[in-house]
Every structure is written in C-alpha cells, then in structure tokens.
Image (cartoon, rainbow, N blue to C red; front, top):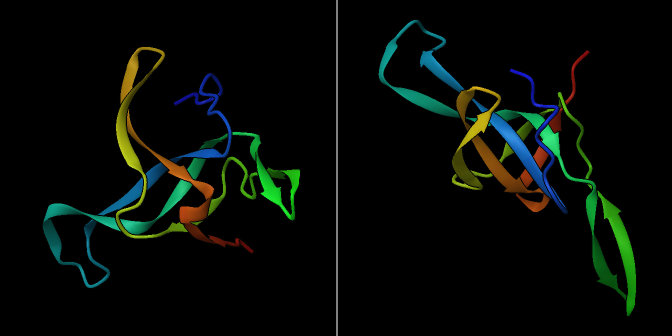
Length: 104
C-alpha cells in the first residue's frame, strides 16, 4: 500500500502492527495474536516542547520503515482509507515507543 499520502501532524507516528497466526512452535492461533512490535508507515515532523523555560523543537526519533517495540495497549487503532483500500493502522505518540529494532 502507498502510505506517501498519509501525513500525520505533530509528533504522531502511524504504525502497521505485526500479527502472528502461528506460534514459533507451529501452533495455530484461533484468534490472531498481536505482537508488541510494528513497522512505521508514516511519522509527523515532531513537536514543540518547553524545556527550562524555553521552547525547543523535538524531532520524531523514528523514520518510515523502522521496526519498533511499542508499549502494550498503546495507541489508537483506526480504520484508514488510503486510495481505494481500507486498512487498520495504529496512531501513537512517540513516548509510547520503547525501542527500535536495528537490522543488520
């Protein structure tokens, strides 16, 4: 899907959550299991924050394509229409991302 038309505002990050239908041991889940990691499909530029009485612009620390670890139950899942297709995407604040999974 082409996410280039999706432009979040402020420090909002849009994720496509990864799910799992089969466990590592080969057990098939009756209900799809949501994993705690996702792929960044869009990210806002950042937001202004107050630090020591001054306004400082803090850029978003992730980029499109990054795989991130998210806090359980964080973000808001919304059906989003992009082009002619509907997809469930999760909108999250940068503070709910606990880490980036680096690829070799």
